[in-house]
Image 1 (cartoon, rainbow, N blue to C red):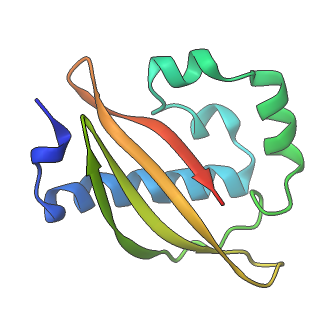
Image 2 (image 1 turned 90 degrees about the vertical axis):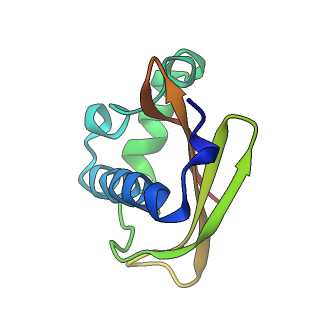
Length: 116
């Protein structure tokens, strides 16, 4: 099964709720819930102490606007990247949100998530 074979509509049904959860848990500082859909390899690659510190103290990560502007999908290999315009409640400007999805053991998981 390859996620790139899904239609845009099917991908939106998967990606948008996952993105919404990341924003909610980031704003609430719930790190355990934030990483719950991460792939095994992503979790292995994280320096949890550093990520936890960054997560807890980031002004941007704790004040994200919940409304999302979906920009589109990029399909490559066995992964799909969903792109979002992101805003902050207390900082002026816009950021690019990236959510990389793929299958792991038959389940859609997050292989990368970031805000630039």
